[in-house]
Image 1 (tube, rainbow, N blue to C red):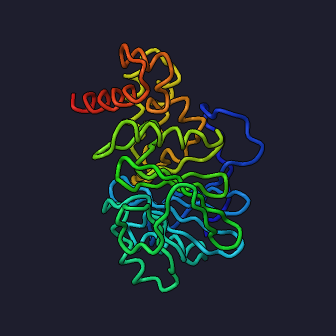
Image 2: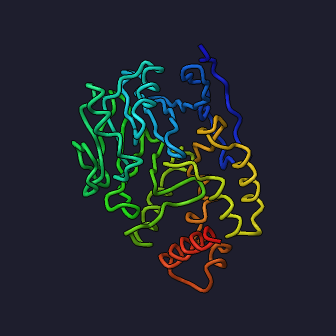
Length: 302
C-alpha cells in the first residue's frame, strides 16, 4: 500500500525549464511508522534516498530493467535492505564515495548479510572496507543492463573520494558537494576542492545532485552571510527551513541540481562578484576557495 504516485511541483528556484517529470514521491512504510521517501525515476534507473544516522543519506539506485540495485554509502544495513525489499530490488553492488565510517562502516556487514553483492567500488587509494574494485577518474561500468555509472575522482575530503555520475542524470557527491555547501577539506587542499567543484559543475545544469548529508539549512544561512544582498539566497534559506529533514519525517531538501548549486552554493560561486567581494582583494581562484571555506568555518564558530 501507499504507492500512489504524486507529482512534486518544481520549487521556485528551479533553474531551467524541464520537459519531463524530475521525480515522484511515494511512501515507504517502516513497521507502523510511515516515512516519506522520494524516488527519482529516469529512463533507466530509479533513485531512492534512505536517511541514516543523524543526518546521513544513503541511496538505493535500481536498474529498472533488471531490478538490480546499487547501495550508495550503506551505513545502516537494515534500512537499506528494507528499501530494497520494499522495491523488489536485489542489491548487487556497493558504491562508496569515501572511507569515513559514516559512509563505509556498513560495507562489511552488508556484504555478509546479502549474498548477491559481488562488487564493492571505492576510490583509488581510499582504503574502502571490502573494496573489490578501486576506481579513478573517467572509469565507467554498468549496473544491471541499462544503467551506466561514471566515476569522477574528487580527492580533498579524503585522499580517494569519488563521486558517481549515473545514467547521465544523477550525481552522488558524498561529502564533496552538499546542497549550498562543501565538505571539510581535512588533509586536502583548496586547489583540490576547487578542481572537484569544477568537475562536478561541468555536468549539465539539470543533473540531480544527491548529497551525503542533510546540512542545507545551515549551509543556506552561511550563503546569506556570504552574499547578504542576494534575495534568491534568502528565499532558499526560508525554503530549506520549511522543508526540514527526511530524518525527522519531513520533506528534506534533496535532490538539488547542478543549476541550483551554481545559483546558490557559495563554493560554486567563487567567480561571482559578490563572493569575490566577500573574499576581499584576491585574483586567485584557489585562494578564494580557501577564503570561502575559512569564512564558513569562522562563521560556524560564532
